[in-house]
Amino acid sequence: MTYQILTNGQTKYACFGILILISALVAGCAITPRPSVEIYIAPIEGHPNAKVNAETGAVTVQQKGVAVTLEPLDEVELFALTDNPRMNPYLFVRGNGAVEPIYTVFEVTVHNLDTPRVLADDAAVLIDANGAQYGNLPYDYFEALYDNLESPQHPSTTIAPYPNYYPTFQRYYPYYQTYLDVAALEVGRDVVQASLFTSGKLFPGAKRRGLLIFDRLNMDATELKVILPEIRIVRSNGKQDKLTFKFDFRQVIVEK
Image 1 (tube, rainbow, N blue to C red):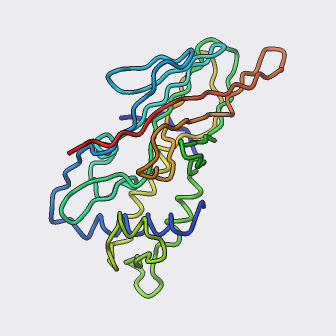
Image 2 (cartoon, rainbow, N blue to C red; image 1 turned 45 degrees about the vertical axis):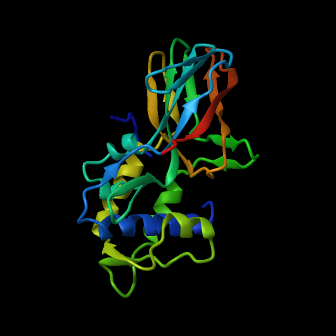
C-alpha cells in the first residue's frame, strides 16, 4: 500500500497506551505475529450520493467535482504496512503472537475530479452511537509521544509503566514493565510521518491519500459517523465553497 504524502494529546492514558504497545512489540519477538480479524468496521449502505465498494468496504462520496473515499482498515491490512510488524506504530503484538489494533484507522483519498483547485484539511471527526466524539490524531501527537519515550537512566531503552489508573488499558495491555531498543522507535516515527493524511492543495485530476487515526472505539460502540468538515473548492474568481463529507459505518464484532 503506497501513500501519496508530501511533507508533513488527547489524553495521558493514550500516551501510556502507545508506550506499552511498542514495548510489547519487542518483548514478544520470539513468536511469529498472527494477525486475524476479530473486530472490523463495515459501511452502512443507503446514504445519499455514497457508493460502497463491497470488496474493500470503502465508501466514496462525491460533491461538486470532488470525490472522497474512506476505507476502514483492519489489523490484517495494518499488519501489511511495515515489513517488521513489531515496529508497526498502529498495532499491538502480544507475547503469544496475537495481533490487534490500538487505534481505529481509516484510509482517506481526496480526488479533485475537475475543479480549478481543492484545499483539503487533515482534520476529521468521528462520532459513535453513544455520542462520544473523537478528533483524528495528528503527527504532532505521535511526535510528542516518541520524544518522551527515552529513559534518562537508560538512553538506549524506554520504560512503560503499568497504567493501573485506567481499566481499559488494563484489559487490553496487561504488561507491568518492559524495555526496548529506542532505535526501533525511529522506524515507527517514520511510518507515522509517511502514512498520515496531511493538508494540501489539489489541482484538477490530483489525488491525496493517507491515514486518519482515531483512538480505539469502545467495544459497545455500534454505529458511527466520520466527518471531514474542511474540504474547500477555490473557484477561478477566488471564491471558496466549503464542503462537508459524511460517512456512515458500524463496528462489527466477529463471533467465535
